[in-house]
Length: 64
Image (cartoon, rainbow, N blue to C red):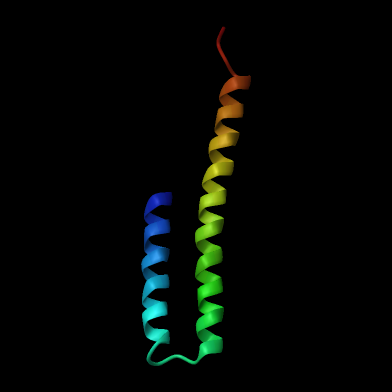
């Protein structure tokens, strides 16, 4: 799911970039780029945090 979210957000960000060259004012375009870029970063960092937490959980609950 995370890879899909990153792909979708990057496609949306690319569409926003293409539209900014023609229609949207520069201030709105910068705000949208920042929001979508932050969403991509949050998705990646969230996935990393979840993976690290899962590994730590599995280490603490070994059946040895």
